[in-house]
Image (cartoon, rainbow, N blue to C red):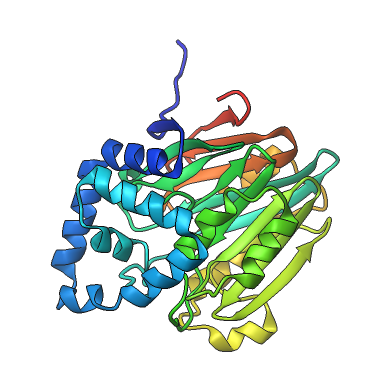
Length: 334
């Protein structure tokens, strides 16, 4: 009997920013409408949060006008108000998810180049919020895991230029600027690490993710806290990031340091090797030795992604990898 592993829903789109946005909005209209309704119902004095949007919206439109076109098209396709959908993508104003455990990212090296892996952790029961997207805009295509009720890019992605991005949540005080979701989205279309660095250094950040980006044989770790950005070149040394700051000059911005994040980081580092291949990364992301703070969490790990940029390969596991199966995708072949 031939076993067919379960996979996430898949959507492929080619066109303009408006075309991509409309297709996403129409495809996941019900999911986006439910997310908006849930947010409206769960936030006391919801209208006061909507009133705070304008300066963030203005900063985003000034910096990334094309991504505002995409966001507006998603909202139009889903038949939800633009402001309500923007709020879903502006966690700087309201983020109900700060208490949940989040992701673990691993970077390894071998003779073929860099390999990156990440477990996508979120609140239990959210696995149906995820899908696989391949979008082509102009001469750039990107593919990866993303959330139906957010703009693309809020997980792990690889583009046709061989540039990969993994994200981890970091919790810090916020300010008016470009929400972190849009920075992550913009990186999906970068053609080089130099372009990523320019984007990171010139964007007026409202807050920030941890971004682990890689291309060819080079990987860079960025940690963001407002206008303070730490850049670390990852050169032939295994690297792990979870949900706390590693840069000493940014630790002072830590809002929610967690025992869980530190435990996952330390355990993953224990498992790294000087040379790591696909199976080594799978072993780390599947680890459950620490039963209190496991890397692979059967309740919260929604999926797992491993990227081999030099081969333009993405391996994706539906659900937690301690029980699931990875499926290989080739960005050039999809």
